[in-house]
Image: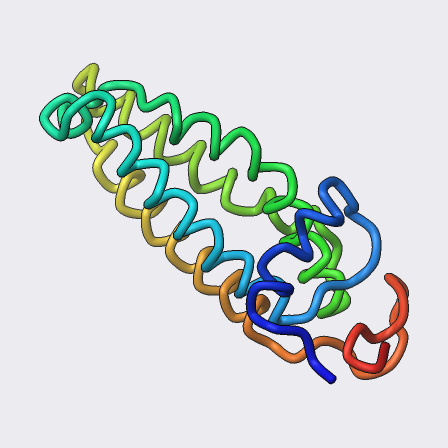
Length: 157
């Protein structure tokens, strides 16, 4: 019998910092929903503590910061295990860093008035979009059927 949605949501918390092995699509996507719900709840708590105007103005929300800090590592671990399920290394998660560096450099160049920096900004944005879509496609893809170099098929377990 398959697990309930709640069980899938907390599964990555049980494997808090486990980067080895594989994660099914259900485990990854139910945890993403859990992250969204936890973040929304934390935002509501921060609004009650600080007021909506302060939060919109960029005030630090302590509940949101605490939730982000607590769920960062399990979110990263489940993303790595999800990539392992598709027979890819977890290092692919660093791929968005390349266009982010381009975007940062281009934004800085624009700020100081370097001519032609807008083209780099557009190229970095396009590359970041492509990389993000690629990762989403991999997260949605069926994992390797049977055992792969990262372990046994989690569906057959």
